[in-house]
Length: 203
Picture 1 (cartoon, rainbow, N blue to C red):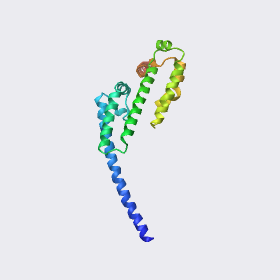
Picture 2 (cartoon, rainbow, N blue to C red):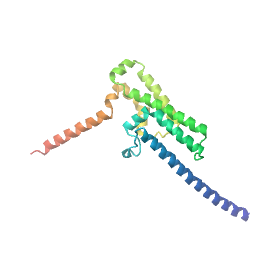
Picture 3 (tube, one colour):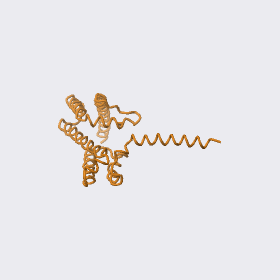
Picture 4 (cartoon, rainbow, N blue to C red):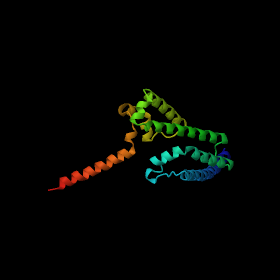
């Protein structure tokens, strides 16, 4: 019994050491793959803004959607090369399937952006089915997002999932309320604050 216990402890130490060694290898290879995909983003003119914690800024998202096929082609090449080198746990089939699914998500996201950028005239021309089509599209988009197990914690995802259709019903169109207009209103508001603040300070 005592000998078996000593052997079990020894095995535990050796297994743990092997696990930690393999973990370091995987972390190293994962970083290499991550860096190569960062280079792929830069090659299509997309920079991960440090001010957003590494997330893409608005223009970067637009650029990525416009050149999504090119980016995913590069990602597939990087992942398959890692598979050939034995530096990934995924099989070749899994790599191809995941790449295909993310391509499909990009298509859904581009279609979603098309809805968001419709102006009032385009909304009227679309007809009475806009809200139903948008709601159905969001359901598919959310399903795909969950299917790929992407985090649902992002505030913008919550806005799309739970409030986008209601915003369309209330405002008719969202294109005129994009970030550029909001920033412009912010500038005008700050200008008025300075003006009125100066008047208040005038004796």
